[in-house]
Length: 178
Image (cartoon, rainbow, N blue to C red):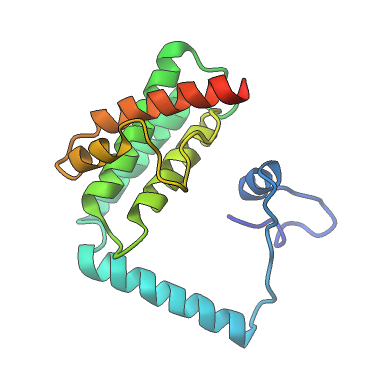
């Protein structure tokens, strides 16, 4: 859920999305419900997403494929609960996950434009979810072998992306001292 405004009245609540926005200086603007202008914009966005993602690539092959993905996410959450201090091996596992997710997004290339930025957002989201800083720059496009890794990702190889991400994380930590 992206908002707590439908929570029990009089009880303040901050959902994870609002917390991430607040910590990163982002204002989460809420719109009025049943606003024709807002509703129309959202409907057009959903139509675009459906056309560019579902109509081209289709939904999950089966309910079993969706359940398999949900089970994998649950196992990951159990292994690395939010707020846990990570060991070196766990940081490596998170970077591998970020690299894999990014490379898969690049490989399936669901949108006509913006796939790289979206993949970098996914990588940062996963890193932050596991307690790492958002170390992958959205713009300009990163260096550190990122372009070459993207070409390999198109051929199904995620490991070069993870290697580039390790270099980016190390440089981020050196620069910002986290």
